[in-house]
Length: 263
Image (cartoon, rainbow, N blue to C red; front, side, top):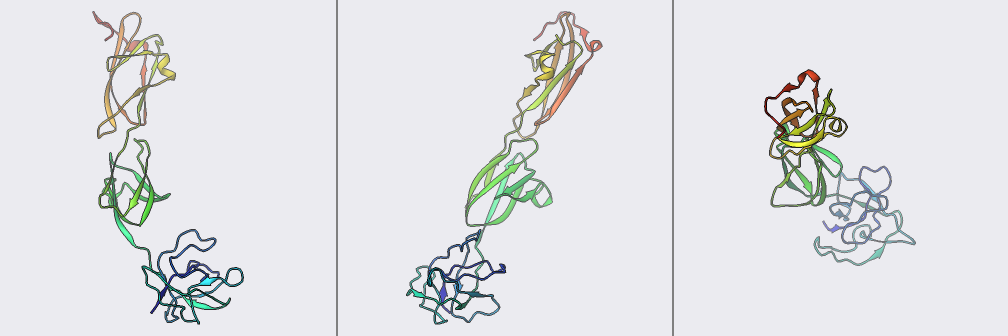
């Protein structure tokens, strides 16, 4: 058979298929959202495919069909053909070759909870991805927008080009952990990991921000409150990226320190 490239409506569209394009590379028809992939066979011998009515543009329109057979033989890589006008109502048989897809692998550290590609959810942290370790699939050739999400991390958005010889590996950045102080002694001084963080009153409304790095979203911090009379409250707490930890301190929680000042 002879291959001819034409402009067309998707096969599942209930309207007419438009074969009124030039012989050559496929181009989207008006109102079509995706660029068609493949070639159309115009020798009228295909079976099991939907017919396509030629819809001329203007007073006729150039198209890649014929008598209704074919206008010329076309090489799939370098199409060449005589250009002839088709009559409205001429029909051609259309066969669509599915788009070529290429293997893609995406992984992140720490593990992801979800991946969307071009706005579509494609992966979750379940058994199919080894619980967020690796996403393996196939994508059509071209550029794609990827968003990796985790409750503990900032969204990681980037663009990939397919095909790619290498897997796509991303390093996610943890959200900060927050520590709020609720103390019955609002004037008490607050220290986190030996660093002064202001008064308990100020840290009730403005949490202490803890930076978390490494592979795990948790971190152990040492909190100490010192009141004006020398009473001390010490707590060892585990904070989590993206979450708030509240430390409550009653007056009776402060204990006298023998000869200790804030460090």
